[in-house]
Image 1 (cartoon, rainbow, N blue to C red):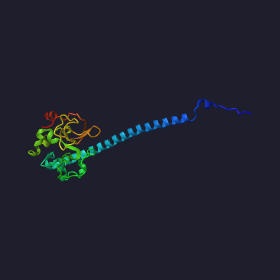
Image 2 (cartoon, helix red, strand yellow):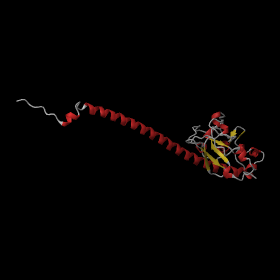
Image 3 (tube, helix red, strand yellow):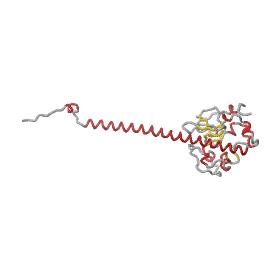
Image 4 (cartoon, rainbow, N blue to C red):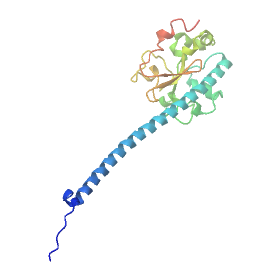
Length: 229
């Protein structure tokens, strides 16, 4: 007696057997790997933003501590520290005078500048030491007279909440903020290094944030007569 071959319903639906199933499995693996890669890229990007946000918060804290140091200096000398002169920058006065505890206190976490303080180094790198630019003696032309008239700037400034004092920068002094674009010279802009934003310490101690192109601190604005008496 001949044995009859039994054909099942599954054989009819899948005539090539399990090879087709293996093919779908490989496609699924490739799709899964691609999705995992996209998710990893998104995760790394998010982590980068979180880290930079944390550095911006640290920067804000250090700027506020600098405000305490500058105000203490002002109380002792009846003027703000000079931005630069006699081969000394404003942070030299704060460091050597004991107004800040360490080089870290005058260094932006995102600045990428020197970790050690060397008052004898006069390189361009040192001229941008710490990553903060000091503005007060230059945005208002008469303020540069503080060496000759020590109390001039301090006593006449009345709109302290509107006056930029120290900002994220790539040079020790910020001479102008008339057109602070990314391509401007380091002395004519702030450094928007925190996710496209710069932290700016105002003369009353609060922090403003600014993007490149922000012209609210033009010299014509700061010298319109309403900021001082």
